[in-house]
Image (cartoon, rainbow, N blue to C red; front, side, top):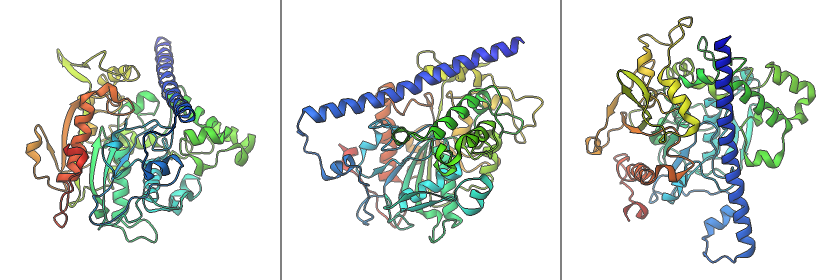
Length: 463
């Protein structure tokens, strides 16, 4: 009984903190949009906006040219509960980092959809066409095979001669890794793809080996697929189902969880369909085709078993942590330096013990390896792909150690930061924000290039 009461108190606190933070993000976006609308009504355009900015304001698609003299695009891929350009009004998931270079794209992918579905969406976002989730996958997961139509791709020239740089945050890293594997395996019908379409991948707090947080949030450690009856994720599941079933178009245009291909709207399912969804008889949560099962240790191991590190692609990873050792115990390294939404999870994850009743997720597993964390992911998970097979890696203490960069190796740093330190709110990171993203963009432009191409040096970074 005491354990149940403690669990309910923890659930109440976690839910309250997450709801408040979600409301803060949503209200900030709305307030910003209202402010811009009011300014536009009462003040003339004195900033001489460029044609590209005018097109964006009118909702037209930004298409990047694939001319050889132009540098490869940099594509920023958001993580779980994230959003791309065009969602949540003028709010930026990457806190405006996309403004540091002229050729940056920020796709809007499903915020809770599976890694597989998001990888397919990312391909068609760049190349154009109707999203094809794959016949076999769609049948097994109970959703439509086809999704959103991109009448014009954002980089239709994308191929091995016109590759792109990817920068992924959190789960966005696994999306890119799976996409590159799909390109290598030529899984996109009608396209002759290869892994060389990806020039580099930079991981920012990347979820490459899963996270023990999923179990605190409600995934069962026994199988890594089902959701506990009383948990934060159970409340999330119910909320998402109701949000998609009610299907208020203007609200979903503002923010969308990405499950449109499951057709959960009341127009399609009716009241009985809602009952089936809530009881877990249908929908993404019934077929486990959503992102949380992919982020458990079991789900990540299963996915990693099929993913390679490719010899002609450059890889760099920034792992984050907000823990330290005190008298042999792992504890949060700060109180004020950790976002309130993450502090409880930093503490819990630092004390994680795998249940004795559940089989160990992999051979050689040790609880102490998974104690350091940033409130969302374990630090061991963010350095490089390491389970079930460890990929080539090099720990970087000074950037001079990795000049020149060698492809096919995961260079990684460990930084003192929580999981959302470098996104959404630029002011939290301060000067570290600019140091991080300037470093990433400089690496993409100056150091990550194949021998047949010369490095590109954008003016913005050199100034």
